[in-house]
Amino acid sequence: MTATLEAPTVHTGPKTVEKARKKSRLGKAFRSSAAILLFLAIWELAPQFVLDEGTRTFLPPLSEDLVALWELILNGQLADHLLASLGRSAAGFVIAVGVSVPLGLLIAWYRPLAEFLNPLLELARNTAALALLPVFTLLLGIGEVSKIALIVYACVWPVLLNTIAGVNTVDPLLVKAARSLGLSSPNLFRKVILPSAVPTIFTGIRMAAAYSILILIAAEMVGAKAGLGYLINNSQVNFQIQQMYAAIITVSVLGLAINAGFVALERRFSTWRVKEKA
Image (tube, rainbow, N blue to C red; front, side):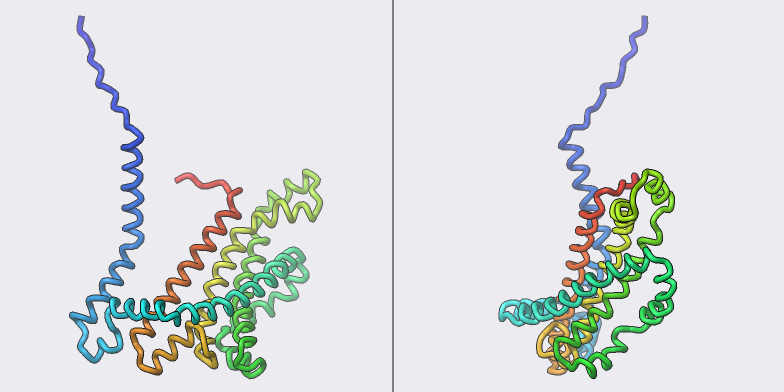
């Protein structure tokens, strides 16, 4: 008789699996940040070894800009300007979201109202907010009110239009199924339409959050005495180039942080959705 030898079964322990997962996460993190790391390396090396002295004056290495950023942090200037910008941005953003979401739900729910307002909405959404900066300044002055009003105007449209789109793109089969189960219109709206529209609404909210920073920076360059936009413009006028880039870096990091926060918030409010398998 011939004996058959079976290959021994190799069991992968939990430590091996965990190491593989960590390696996979590290590789994914490196791939996602490789372009940024390359850009930062070019920013540091090109002014030192490629650009001439005159050009280097206007584009200093990243290390010098980071030193200027650290000095702004230590002397408290960055915190003062950052708080001023965040206060204006948050005020305009909250007002815009508070107005746009209910208004968008109302317009999407009542079709005759949507058909009546659609031409006006299309006209307003295609009017750049910064083009209206002189109008807001003339009507409301160069103080806080005009800046917050401009942010409200810029943030209203992405939230409003995405709210309308979110309601309009709800699966009709879900609505029919809910009606067949005897749901009243308020319950249908609360349990079916609104949850289905949440991801699209949050897309508009994330866009509005980005707009609130970008529009504010431009508005603060006119008639402001504090804020990141004022810091960028004032540093450029006074030829403090490293400080100017430090403020620009702060704006970029702030935008990334705000976007990441809203992505996490969107996931929190969309936990009911079924995740797609890869």
